Image (cartoon, rainbow, N blue to C red):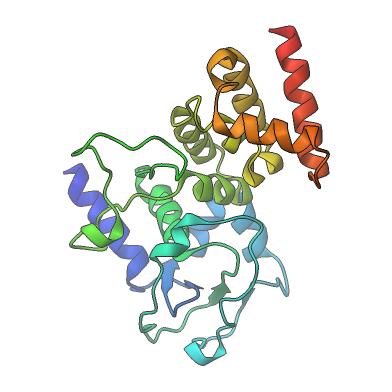
Amino acid sequence: MTKVYTYITIDVIDAPASLNVTFFFHGNRTLHGNSTFLALNSPYFKTLFSSVGFSESSNKKQSITPAAYPPLTKKRAFHDSDDEADSPTPAPAHSSSYEVRVEETSYLTYRAVLSWMLTRQIVFARLSTASPLPPGDEVPTLSTLSSLSSLPATSPKSVYRLAHFLGLDELGLLALASIVSQIDPSNAIEELFGELTALYEPLQVALLDYAARNWDKVKQSKGWKELEGSIDAEEDVPVATTRLFAKLLRRLSKA
């Protein structure tokens, strides 16, 4: 019964029905929601739908045509792996009270988060830096599922960003746990000094703790040797990297 309910509720965000919010994404994709439900579950949406003249939406009773979409050329703060699965698709004609154009997050990430808000179910993908899973243990992806009503695997990094932005603390903790669970000595440094970690203190603390606890193995990794070499050679290392490097050294001195 739970599975049936999950499929039905996820279908709701794919089909307009009586919902009054339409999200527009690159590639002519759309998702749908209810402003009251979204506002009750997210501080961001509460502010968005109660404000006047908010920048990401309008009260126009009309659809945004595909021709009005900006080209997908805006540089992201860091790579959102879910974008790789996004592809153009005809946008259904639908008029909403609120029309929200999403510029910085992929359709798949937003869909996974809206689905989680309805069902409290989500499937996280493997990190690109994580060790491969044994054959047969792969998580599902959109291309391998027969229906969009199923749950494709979603980047935990992308979900973490969006959950933080929308004020979904519970989901943020789940995404953080997924990221940390995929850290091993071979990818700890790459993830610790990645762009996402520099932006979010809880993730930074978790990865610093992992590196300190497993330092004997982490210091043998390719990532650490490359980072140490860059700093020793006084190459053009970002300020954030040198600061985090100093944090790591202090953390190790206390271990």
